[in-house]
Length: 558
Image 1 (cartoon, one colour):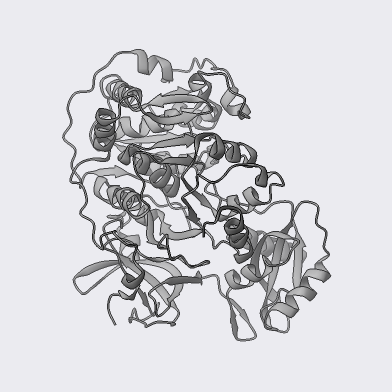
Image 2: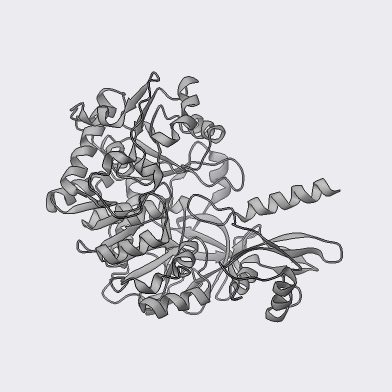
């Protein structure tokens, strides 16, 4: 069967099928945009505009300090532990300027979790938000880290604003007297100029970590070339031009926010409107105020955005592309978005291992609840998970990917590499662990994670399918389905549900309704209402956490 290519019939008009990638570093993207558009806002942060010239100057200044005062050299890992902020952007490009490696860390991680990231990456320097310093300071005192640069987000609140600014952003700068700690302003004002460093496309640039849902988090080795593949690719595919304005709401430590909402706009010379915390009213106001054209998000954000009773009062007519990934957007929510904006939601698919998208829906012909079609120069196939034999249209199997955005491998984990990669047709394919199928048009659809299937009386139940049906219930805002033991059937689906504001329902009502909506072996026999579902820093629902909590609960009851 080989490579799937039927989707080219629906490929966007005037978009090439293959895309040559820059041989330059990602830092060079900023340098070029700053020369082209020096006075144009690169970032707008709660009313404060940061032009490209200033962004480049600050990145150079921080790079000089990291190099001359803290000893950061080419190939060294620098931890970036911070919420969305101008300092995140400056640090990211400063590290790349030196040929060093950014280690982006989820700001939701606590002290006990950080030890693994410091130890595994070998980072000696970290740049952190001041509200997070207390969590990482044990690594400084224990000797894992030698220096920490501490930043206060309020340093970049330079204009009065009527926007709702999060408390963490308004918080005044605090002095930290610990040895090895450097205030952000001191580092920038030191006046150091970095010496030249030769950085090529195949040099290591980024070490993001997998979420750790299948064990301890693993680092993914990405080069400047793999980063360029998705940031340049999405710019071309989604017509991100210098006149575009992107709303940056996804966390920048996560590959989708990093690539779509920060690196792609910088590459094209566009402007991005930066939010530290998600707030649906502020987001709608920013869209209206700045004429946002591109919004990359996660489906849970869209659900929240559209359930805002005031959403119809905002002018959202500037939107050109609204899309994202992480989880399928419920059909009913997609219809509401279309009614409000005239846009179809553009879903995509990617992984930390592929530094964002490997699949994306064509803007003019998207399919809802669909991963999309393979991105530029991606060979995506569906294989039998056990034999690795290629499967055809409509057959469910594991998604495997070969493409320019695939990581070089896991950081210092040759055992994991052997499990994750295989060779075919002269190409190196990565095993995603996701069960998918593609249709006759070459569009790929998620079935579920390889290990998430529920076996009910011998029937396969895929939780994603049950969740998608539950979203159609008018009282359901969010749903997550797991498998629980069932005496008569082996396993049965259980649903955790967050109700819409102002809506009421009983577990019996939901079960009765679901019984009418799906086959007898599929509908959840048990429903538990919760105020919120556990989510990762990127907004993905952590179904494994619910599964593990349920297993502990059942074990304790025996």
